[in-house]
Image (cartoon, rainbow, N blue to C red; front, top):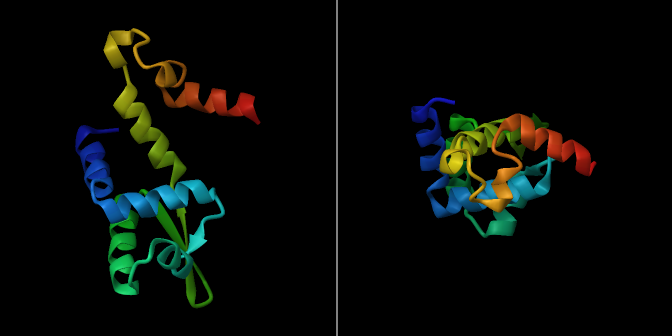
Length: 118
């Protein structure tokens, strides 16, 4: 991941509403949630929600899939995974300073760890 791309993703998550939307979608899992349910759960007006969903979608943090007249949104776990790997790559010059990231400072390690849990 390029630094500019990481900065763009972090900037998108730097807004309270977008961060809340993204966290809700991450918690929802790969099946995601439709837009009206997101608005209800977060208490957001449709126009405001639409604006934030478009921004998160534009930077690649979420994806939207049309189901008849509704749009179903889900987190883009690949992009999230790449961002986490970028942020933790060679953390503390390779020393295990962050216990929760020591075993998963690369995409490959995180995916291997996730596979062991399943």
